[in-house]
Image (cartoon, rainbow, N blue to C red; front, side):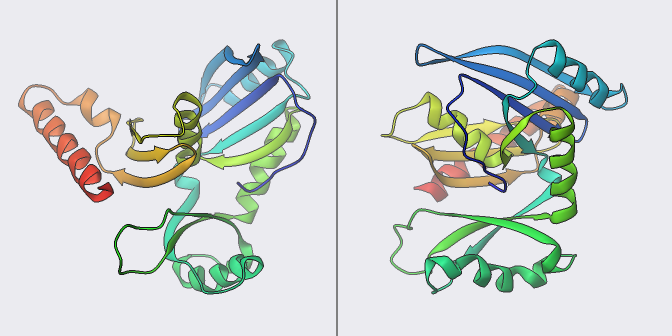
Amino acid sequence: MFFTKKRAQATLQVGVGFHSDGLSLVSVNQVAGQRRLENCNFYTTGTNAEVELSHAVKAQGLRGAPVVAVLPPNSYSLFQVETPEVEHEELKSAIRWRIKDLLDYHIDDAVLDIFDLPVSQRRSGPRMMYVVVVKRSLIQQYVDKLESLGLEIVAIDITELALRNVLAATGGEEGFQALLYLPPRYGLIEIVQGDTLYLNRRIEISGSDLEEQGGFGLQEQLDSLVLELQRSLDYHE
């Protein structure tokens, strides 16, 4: 999304996830056209996570490898806005003006990127697009951390599009795929076709809610989850 750099094709790629409760590190190798998971680890906040991550990068021989980092959902804002009627090269400037009052910091301190939503089957209504916004100083902090690990930054991405990429890599171009993602503090429903994100919905039910409930409470949570899924599928239709 925010930071891309052309480089020679490499067989090994690293992923670093920044989370509210720690850091994750994954390395994937491309072998005979197939992706092979080499390593996958999580380092919990409060246990010298950054030091452990640095040691792991060195121990696994990952220094200099291309890395894609994924930002924690609470570090960026994701807006759905009407697509401005301007030339393509003027889109970002027009979007910056449109969202400036939605931020709690000055628009000059923001880094943003945009991606399209598919055209709705409904005849009425404007064309919509997604806007991702992050505070510039925060992006710089993540860049500094990655460079201190000796990794070569290819891109800094967001959770929603990282999950989209997983579905795109595992499915075909035809037909829709739906994903229910339930990390500890929130829930997410996505529907994609190929590499196109059709629907993205945050829901209040989280993985922690299901773990902590029991008996009738759990059934109530599951019923609410099914209802959220049904609403998402109906809206998609």
